[in-house]
Length: 501
Image (cartoon, rainbow, N blue to C red; front, side, top):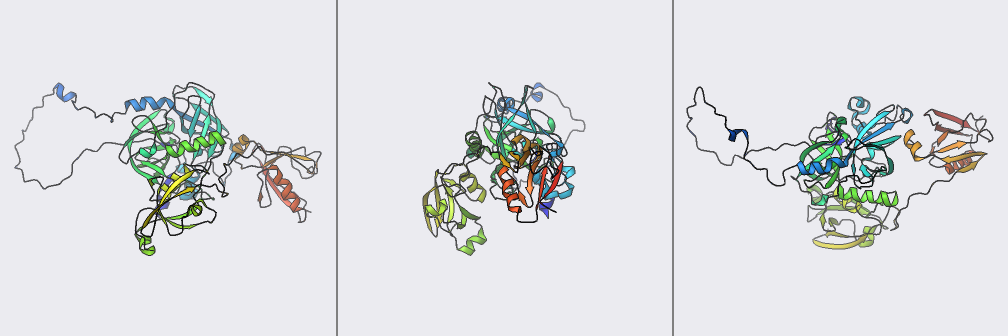
């Protein structure tokens, strides 16, 4: 399959490479022209006019000003990964490559997340003078340490403010002031064929600037696959040169305004082959605002199952338009149902913006929060309609989702079970867990378990918080026992049977 031959990788992502092709179309067949005599030994006279062109670069096609404005605000993101954070089943690298190459991934390894410990590399964009930086989630995911190197070679240790795997974005903070920063541009105004620049650090080549054009918008390349189907893809496609080290870098217009965060490439080899993809700034700015205000992204939902309209579907469903997205179904508690939408409607616009693909609709809705109102234009039969929908969250309410408070420690069987810090989770590649201490004076002393052991699973149940240990071990009392799985802070994995003869 061609899909197996092509790699869509969230690499170190995007530099824009492009050239200008000058030529003409053969509209009419010219009349034959008699060949002219050519001197056997032509005389070429070099003049000053031949050395310097009198051609003036049209206004707007000069990249110097934009490059000078943006380069100081694009940083090199350096990450460290502890060896225990990676096991043989879960290679510490770009997870999206695995589905295309399986065990042959080694030759395509990028710079972001090295296997078996070591350092990774990516890019980031300063968006505020007081040290806030946006980058890709896959650049810093599971890193035990994050450092940022500025264009002027200053180095800072960075704090992870928040991350959103659904959009592959993350926000970092460094302790510095009066930093150069890039202003947000409006990615909705971007047009296919428009010149753009990308700035990043491919292959550790700091402060690299390249140019290209926008080749498409609203691309869904099916690279942010998630179990909850909440990944959002509506990429800006460019002919940007995207190589390892550029992920998280800036895609800007010729005014130097940020219109995208470079994120992915389409390639057979792992290096640039002509297609690059960036997260639109209109979506990125909303995600960043949410992470700064709430620590979690506020995901608003219209609550519809949709299918893109094509000639086959239009014929089958007797649709009167080929534009828009077809509503296959919707839940009774959804924002769409409350607004009066029905199965069989064709949504054509969100707030006046045409939506012809699933990714375009998702991008438009994802810019809002639960409780926000949007205008939805749709076709029902031959009649155009418009309704106002009040968006809801995943639980069907309009409430803003707050970050879960710090998980409390639990006393159980004489031992203390404490939550695992975010830094330690990142270092060990965990999602939650419970760290046990005080074993010597507890009922765990006969298990062989040591203080500091992090319990991650009990039988088939994942442990995400201390209270889970008490819950699952209490449930196991009526059984023949339980198998406790976990890891020590140095990365050693261990298994302990409890209550088994």
